[in-house]
Image (cartoon, rainbow, N blue to C red; front, side, top):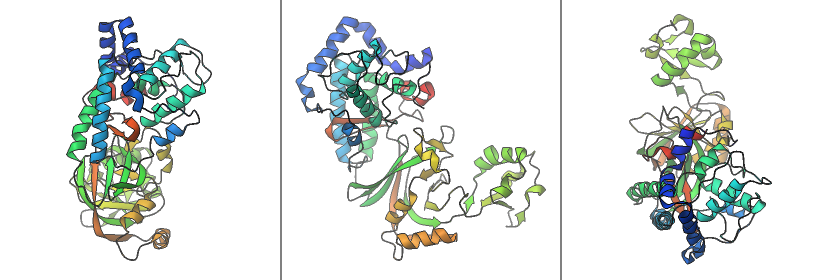
Length: 424
């Protein structure tokens, strides 16, 4: 996904944002002078100058137990905004004009640009030099940059990484300011225990006593079937659930599939029922029309069930929920926007056990036995757990670490932040 390919002129213009206009106004010499001011500034002394090419800085990017939805995170964002205001005032960072993939061993003038770019953003120490050779120190810095942008830290400047590097400092500053408003609105008391789904990060935090107890990768909605922002309370876990297809999936997915393959429903153990609860054989339906939308499509429990082993329920007007999936390979992808609005959870058993801690009779052994049995089992949660679906595309943590994510649903108001539409 990070492999290099040519980017359209429109994509580059969108990725560069306000930085291009700023550079054109200030002139190349002034821009270079401003960059050097940043590199030599004593105010950057708190930034981590200790560099380890082996990658310890990469592991530190996610090594925090501070919840994203917290006053502490909002405080760190306020500090990051101050840092980025100074960067913008000094002229921002240089554009990386790569025409090929950059990685260890490559010699090119664009490597110098990359080096300067990462120094200004604090990913590379200011004493890292100006070599045109891509060395292991630059590799470690780039991996750190990729990690805090939610990318696979492979140390290669491919198309997506290049687009992220060339989002201008003014645009990133605006992204931080936009998200600070969101964080402040959610930084009050959210519960002693709660679950947070961060949509643009495609990730989940289970928080207990103001500290992150668990983190999970998630798969959230596609751009045309977006996961909604909501607040609710998790009241039920269902093991070996039945899956009932929503009308949108029946219309957009299942009917076209049945027109191509009349055995699709039978192979996937999906049965049809009319309004009176009577089972309807698939061959009795006219699939050249949309009459099937009026039927109920229910998939039996099992390994191929769309929710696999588990469904996590909470009341909401969008009819969405959290669930397991038989497509575990999707969690290995960088861009995890694959669902029809519901949220798929990686390692869902761990989250389920955490949710059931206050519900008597449920431990890991009991849970595994019920899942193995294949019997549909509904478990009311003794103490309901608040759940929040939020849209936080930028935040900051300890050590001046600033995190950015693709504005996948284009809610931040700047096209250059929707990298997936220009770079992939």
